[in-house]
Image (cartoon, rainbow, N blue to C red; front, side, top):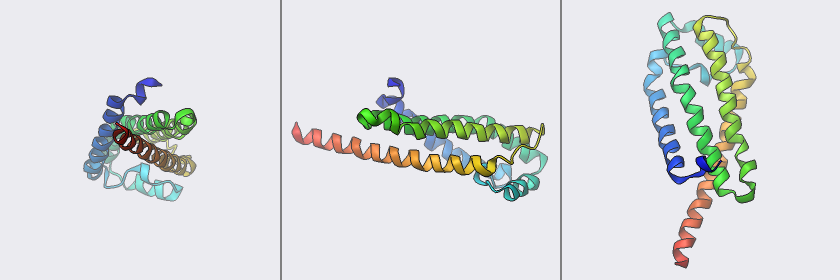
Length: 162
């Protein structure tokens, strides 16, 4: 785990997360304005899916496969790396939500890709997968924010001692 706790790696993951967030914002019109990731209720998910044109579904498929596969790796590993690095002996435990959100988001992406490809409509599990993903994301982000606070505290108290 030392790899994801290194400063250059954490900065790279952070910048990549920001870049991918911007890319999603810019690409939303290409999928009809609404990504399936942002809905979870079965009736809402079905409505968003049914409202897409074939070209929007195709674009959403490719964005899911390309951008939304990189995205959970960038933010999940960033959150986990921050927790692991700055929470001391509790780091491995604090990193669990970061790793878990990565796995759950990839699971959601798989369901969406299967559906968007036309192979089968398998979005029903999003009723619990998407809320789980969001809750894990918020927990991991909060832990990473606390880790950033710890890092800043250490940085400033270290400079005062020097």
